[in-house]
Length: 284
Image 1 (cartoon, rainbow, N blue to C red):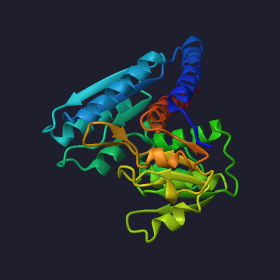
Image 2 (cartoon, helix red, strand yellow):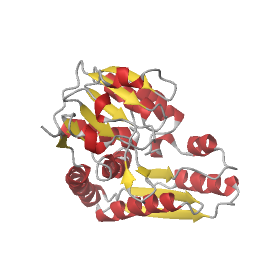
Image 3 (cartoon, rainbow, N blue to C red):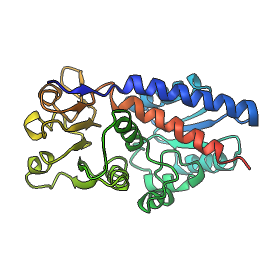
């Protein structure tokens, strides 16, 4: 029996509708409009698309959005100055610097310059530490979206074997912390893992976030497993695909997310959720 597809577009629409209602109520009762400021450095086409989608999502949900663009050769001091300005602006609740930054930037320095209370990406060291302690303030948006997808599909987490392929600070590591907090037994795999299939075949929940097209094939998946594909890769013919070979995986998995239309829409949705949370936390 083919896998049930967890449709990220449908879930994202439902969650965004809830967020729009909450944002409208916050504005009506407290006079506060959740506001996200986005900083884009350079002309990377993918980054431009991501920023455009984030700004559009804000506007559709009734949030305010500010966009600041800089040429790739801009001095880091100018961007750090803008971050300081936004940190001090009480009308701005979330600040996001679109990654990657040009090579002459110290990305860690830039991310650490953001006020932790406005770090809606959840990348500041203080927020990473809080997540590690099991007391998250802001959850990084992609892992947050994955948790929402698991919840929507009614996936039992307590005691489940969860395997994550990819150990990035943006997805893999925070994903492990979130699943661990829900009493999963977590294995974190990476490019140096020996016999990757040995681990993936044990997984009740398999999260692929390594950035290699169709790396996870159907014969690497436990029958009935929940497979979440975070990867997004462009093939030579221009088509997009994930880290999971969808055609072979759907014949084995119990649940499966598509690419595109899976985790991607949920990432932006949870960015809105974090921005709303940041705005609500300013209330006395």
